[in-house]
Length: 176
Image (cartoon, rainbow, N blue to C red):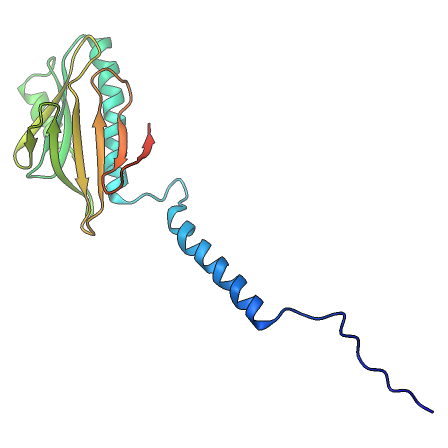
């Protein structure tokens, strides 16, 4: 007599429900983390402008002490450009610096310059001054993107590094 063997059910696979849950969890994690991951060379125009300001802040503080001149970071809110000058420059040098200004690219815009006393400048030109003793005035430069995203670069009076804040969120993004 022949005995028919039934297949063993001990090697069951995953149920459809288990697979759907795992795929949903992986999709959610990817959705939340992948947009925040960037390779070092992949920065947008808004972040590039903020990094330029932060780098200049650091350089200007050092150069003001080393050269014993007042340095200025000029913010032209109308023409959307930034440039550097110092007391040792003549009129021609200042004009050349203005012509060779860093121009904000793409959708990045200089939105406002806010000083420690609360004054805000949304138009015209405003210069942040770096003194030969190594300090500058407390100020904040707000950058905006066409999509509505804001970044704020905060220049501290005695700290050598500027701080970058995501102005749409209450926490610190980075410092450099």
